[in-house]
Image (cartoon, rainbow, N blue to C red):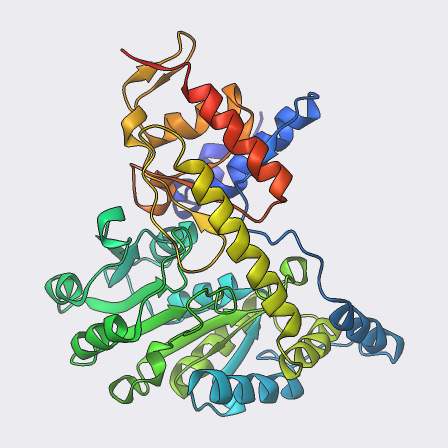
Length: 403
């Protein structure tokens, strides 16, 4: 008799949603495998190669035999470099013992949730949010409390909303700035107002700053730098976006000592330390000037302006002016309740599916990010592909009529 999988897989995993970004990327690949020319704007991955000097540093580390296990929280040289970076660029004062290097920033967030959340603990999540926040919190036994802001508010939740959501069960708050999926950037004043509220409670803030170097305002603010937030923030960052090192799987966090110790314990039982030669190259990256990072940022800025100008030519499409990351998050609700005779669009999920099957452009439904009116498009793609993708979407939508 065969094993019944439904009885073997844990309830936690059965309840877990598949990552929407990964699912849509796979659907794009499946169509491409059939010979269909798909333009995928679904994954959050820079299209630039890792800078040569970083690759050279990894190669040199390999040649000299840096291939052994590293300490669970990271090689000391890298942790020292991270401390220097935090102090100089973010106004954050950490000791090496407060740094935990992980296999990607995502693991850092997972470590925190597993280290802190007890069943029933509430976690405030500012929406739109990155897809994994919700699932990680639920997997750890927490209760996500989602606070939303729409396009009319530049997708930024305010301090008043947060104050109203705090209860005796609130333990964590998670947000990103620059934000995935919206590209919105919280200003100094906005974060200061939030800090004034949160600092009055025993709440740990998880500040996801992975897009720090793709910030078009030239003024990145870390909430952990405010005086009233000392010891109340875990700052998450990494190398995937700003240094275009996605496949290297390397992230890091700076946190209060008690939390760093707890995350070290969690990671020690799950993956142990990240790859040794990757960490040596990452230390070189952090100690370099930011010339290559800024080149990529300026390319993304130009692409942002390009894709926004193209989207504004589509009737009924509402788009704001994101100040960071490499995403646009247009409101497509104008097209709910339309059909082309083959496909009917009722919601953002249908819209994303229609764009893939009818226009052969991969996007991600905003429902995965906590906003059912929008879709996420990544402009980490060539000008040629961006122009062609938006042309396809525009032409495709022209064939849809109200039911």
